[in-house]
Every structure is written in structure tokens, then in C-alpha cells.
Image 1 (cartoon, one colour):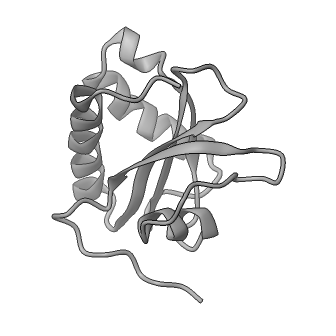
Image 2 (image 1 turned 90 degrees about the vertical axis):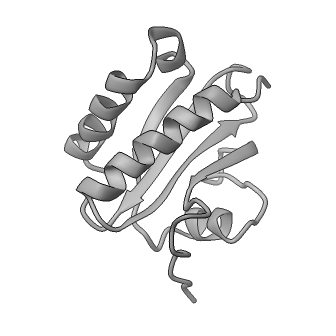
Length: 128
């Protein structure tokens, strides 16, 4: 697996800050790598109070931000964009510093990179 570069994650952090301003409250933005996926491909997970989970419009909104900031080569590193609810167990787990695990029982994730919440953001609400 090819880890994301600092430049790439810095760009994603800038995108997260933009989204957080436009769609408060941004709960999570991060990358996960599926074990069975190509080495350089990452899934981008996002959650905000104003981004509808599992929605095509939400995905289009996030992709529009990605296209403005990322190069074509960087765009190809993102295999999937997934909008999830704030109380999603995986997002809560990753936000609290837990190890990665799959979105679905069939998925296995071997690496996660949490972009947001950043050290500048307020911590996500705890569930459970």
C-alpha cells in the first residue's frame, strides 16, 4: 500500500476546512485503504450535519471540492467518496484513535488516515 503524501493530506485538510465553513458541523473527513484494493487507492469518508449520508448530491458536492484542489493524478488516488452519518461506528472509532476496520463485513481496511477532526477542530461527539 502506498501511503498518502504529506502534500496530498495537506490539500485534503484544506478541503476539510472549506467544507467545515460551508457545511457545519463537519464531523469527519478521512481516508481508508481496503486490503483488497489497489496499493495507491483510498476511499474518502466524510460526515457533516449538512451532508446527507449515502446521497449522490453529497458525493457530487465533495467531489467538486476535490476537483478544485487536487491534480488529476491525485484525483485518481481516491477510489470512492462515501458520505456517512455522524453516528457511524467506524467514523466514531477512527475519530477516537481506534484501529481501522471495514465499513461492511466483507471489507477489510488495513490503513486509515484521519484528516478531520483536526487538532484545530472540536472533538467529535461520543456515541454509545
